[in-house]
Length: 130
Image (tube, rainbow, N blue to C red; front, side):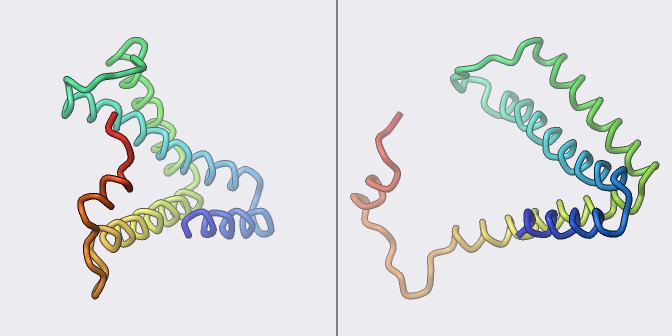
């Protein structure tokens, strides 16, 4: 739904706004998502220090922190320069987060009247252990 909202807003901006506003909107949403992904690397390394890492981040922790700093700068600059496009991007991200939270809560709770999976079925669904 968030992707559909982003598409509708992008189409509306193409029809009513400048290409610059569209680039700001898309760039802002991508910067926020990329920044959150890199922040997840840092959080995971702090919370799970013994976890096996098949790929090591070059220059860790300097490169992720530099990336986060530049992403934050781009977001702040976009909000200051193009507040309406930033508001649309924030609405898209908030909609996506709300839908994710609702769907995650819904999938975590067992459906009414549906029995829980047996251990054998759950093991088959989980797949082989790594």
